[in-house]
Image: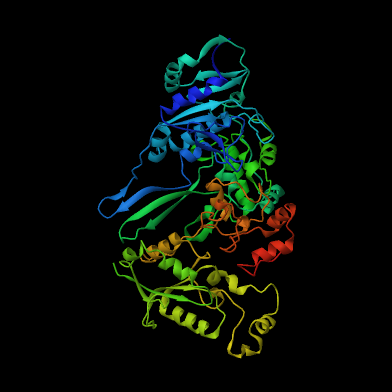
Length: 329
Length: 247
């Protein structure tokens, strides 16, 4: 079939070109051996063999702790002024892309979040194909989330097949035409096929709180929060307000939260709607695998495997989820 | 706005927590618009207790009779009493004794001249008085102290985190020293709020901020055992800042 091809040896030229369009970020292996999304400065090669970064790309859209409002006596509450420069995220896997599409639904829905919206509109997403490992679960349960990018690179012999997914992608293709070759190639399937699945309309019965497996998970859980910090779709946050030194100003901040923390389910008066960890696991399952609120019925797990890789206790919610959901939707 | 009338005192400790406040050199001049350090023996002399205080910030644990009297007096005179630092909250380093008899230890350290040294088992403040809020840390983070004071001046008690050091360590995208390097990092059991200061410099967490709420010692001990650390070593490390850890 007709395809647009870029040879591996031309990738650095493509990256150089992308740098002219904005700040370029991609997966980089650090001196400690860990892979993180980081600036792809000239001379820094992206680690295209790595399957997952420690933190997902959500860190570019939602910061772990950030000011969302500034208060002054004169002006009242004001949005923070943030200079957002065009950025390009290179080397996103389909699950990373699906994670961003989930966050888009959360933060660009009825009431768009201004900080998120500004950062998101400045991002160009460049996806790349991957081969799942034992921690990946994208292929087990197809996700209804879209794995969309501006450009996508599918690995083939000697290089990549380049496809555009947006007008911005078309422009980029047009501007690097000199290193692209139009040719006939057989293009293998990639993991994008596990996304954009039709939304299941099944009605699942309420979960059984007496199921001993909730307690088994709770007994093993250290409460470290790694599972949600590293999850591409976990976006729950806490909101705090701090008074300034000057007596009148204040900052309102939001900070990443985790549904397994005690305070997450605490409400006014010290009352908690999830009093112990077993209940919190049930809550986590309901949110991650069944969805609620505006995203009722939309499973949030994109199968990236980060939660399983980073859990110090090796906990995995998925086998229980798969049993409760009765397999693929 | 009325300035906050503060009493800041140290019991058995190294004064490091009070020094952390004094080290906020850039913020102190502005802070003085909101706070009045009415009793602060470490910083201003002469220091005499007088009148009532909006809040008392107390560093250190209780180990001597006069400290108990001072603490009770501060409690009587203050609307809020805040335990500042791990010694005040948990007993801290002064409470270490590796399970040995305190009387015997006293004889070893002070010999037969121990008569003047009248002391009891070092205890956290809450064993003796009602404590309105805890700020853990050895010492607490500067930001925590400033937020405590700016909050109090607005009539609010501090909001402290209830998650472990690991949470902020992950937020900072550090390589996990426990799972990836098999080091005895106490992060999973230790209260966060320090932005994972030590693990971010590849130094395992020593547990200086005391236990995190709902700490899962049983599971952590199993993980440490898998990494080759036996219970005695783990508990020995944990007891450095809180002698109450028990399997």
